[in-house]
Length: 174
Image (cartoon, rainbow, N blue to C red):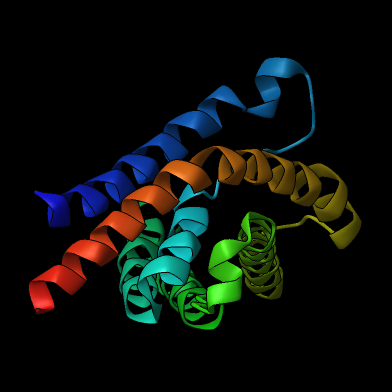
């Protein structure tokens, strides 16, 4: 049961991302700000920090593929991007694990990377007509704010659960 709960939580976050975007749709509030939830990215980086790169890469590749299939018409962009982030930002250094501030900053860096990476690919392929200033003002800052709040909310309970899983894994090895 313990091994299956984490993938179920990740799947739930994936579903919530699609649903919560509808709640924050700019048309509903006469706003031009886009709040893009990147809850999978935040959780994936936290998992990578506390369980290691392998977990983050696997979750990044699986949920990146799901992003590509469900939300985009261009396969491979999110799969590559999330796999790369899982590899690069899963800093399992003990100092990082003890600092909530560093973990939150690393998750924000991951969201920033995903947003710029996908914006760059979409701009290069002329999928979006948004210029950089629009992207910065209408999407990036609001997206970072939303995901900052999410990382503050999820960090403590997810960290406790991941440390519990790590202890179980060590006990089973002996």
